Length: 445
Image (cartoon, rainbow, N blue to C red; front, side):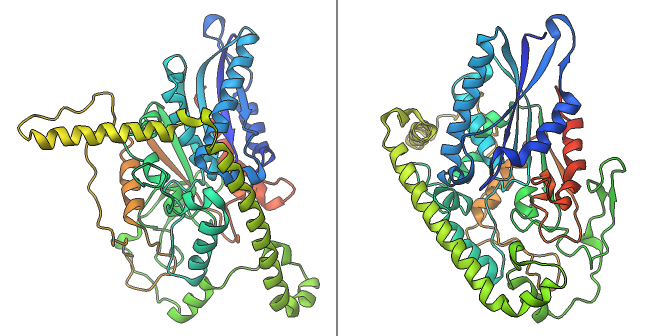
């Protein structure tokens, strides 16, 4: 029996629970489970599926969610120590919101010197909004943005980068991506960083934020002649694709019809029925859809209020004064003091701290900048990225070991749940299994 443990943490997404990652857990145990090696080199994979942020707990923010998972990790380490085993290697996989929690988590662990004795190995995310939720030039996006900011409590504010998380008023998403701060520096410790993103049909976490790309080459793939090659052994996982930059779009559909199609909200899944029930339900949709969204709004409002009460209680806890937001405040004051020193003595050379990564100053993008489409036609799928989001992309894409794997599920209403086989009772979700097998096969034990 191995005394050395490789601890893998799996973190679910918004409104999620550990059951959403059940198939992911099964596959990694099947592919990498058991003990590898012999003697002192023997290593055993141990999987921790985070439990403490389930369901309404996901409203409480990336920061509090990350704090809870960090507590779970340390409890797990202590458990193995009592069994005479030692955690020597560490990996994390986050799905959707869980990927942002993972980025916060590794910052906490690094701050607590966890990686002084534990080797970081794999950092992975699937369909994670790394730069927050982008806006699109549609009425539906405007409405979604409003309700997301106002009815998803602290997490909603952080998703849409309207929070003032740091003492200097910067949103948490921006702080997570800043090379001068511990979250980014912790990320650089992992030799294997791979992110998975849906190339198309992810209505929850679009391509540009999941893949950390300012433009979306797949938004018009049906008209721009893009050629896509897939792995034979991993159905739906893209091996290569031709860039549409030099390709000419076929005749576009009517701009008015295209705007209308992408502006209308989709029919909620609970109101979708097969023949002949769909014939009976269709005349009632003008009543059923408003009723459905009204109930949803009431549910979100109640959950958001409960979350804000929990967060206020947590913020008032004196033991929370050592949290990273306070550490970030001290770091900001130190950086500000250093800048003042240079200003007071302009002839004095400035020496960067060799312990900090990303010493190259990123080029700032003007506040009004919006990434233009390469198409000459209107595209409601063109994201409107803020300067904050563009800076985050620029910083994250400087990560030298970052690899991106794209997934292509055509002909589905929303590919977000499929990519992790979130609900095996839904046959369509099983199509995400090749993605999980690609991850497991590339996981370094």
